[in-house]
Length: 414
Image (cartoon, rainbow, N blue to C red; front, side, top):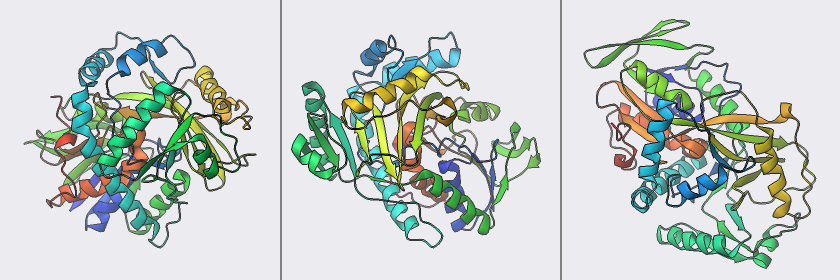
């Protein structure tokens, strides 16, 4: 049995890994040379703590405020683009307490599954991607956000997650190199982190050694369907046939599904990061700066700073004002970190695939029997990569899935 996996990010590579493990012949198809997938520049966080979807109450009002600040962490570029308008209306409808309640357990379960698979992977010969189980610190500076974060921590505890609210002194005791300028923190000890650059390169090596074929710099130009099945892919490298097709193409998923006659709503959210290879000050534990929506991860001796979410069409422009927003927020939380503005050439950006309700798409298409969809992971692609890959392999093999997938139905907006 042969599987064609479209997409060479962490979700596609993980799907290929678990499909190959379960006996499939696998070909991975990617339009790039795999040197700069969205998985490479992310913050490397594994986050069972992220059980609240992006589409939550308050996001609309907050987003409108942020739209008038060029350095803000969230921005939707106004456009008469039909896909954006349709996505936006679905997002507004999804940003409800009901969506938060319905999504909490599925998002917790898939993140916990992924964390356990990362632990297994880290113990596998050939893998050493600087996995650390130190948790993640959510730092806050205002009473309002303190109240929100502590309430969220109580919800996390009710979901069985290991979490603790800390005052400034307790948080400072965990960070010896930096001087905290905060009101307090929540320590999600259930979380972990790794170095994505090592993970991705090691996954590619392991897949090649196991016999997985890579078709790189290869675009899918046409999808031929026949009797509710994908018969073949017409690509820039020639025609490819398989018994199963997995679409794991990140922010390019809607263009692919459209070729197959499906409409899957998804918009790219551009994020930025930059990495200091020899930082003067290092954090002990990865951090999220709550009010600023900035994330910082110490990884394998480096320090990576990242943030922002620009919902707009795919583009290659670097918005230096957004990067300045990241840089300027850091000393507000760490008074002895003097962060310099990086050169444009040192800024990485990638496009996070965002669903309207903040929950990924994982599962079979209802219309095409041999099509599996794995996408829409937004900021949690790395966190959810192994779990998604494992679930895709279980579905392909007709086995019971490790978690309930009802919430992840790829055609729930159809």
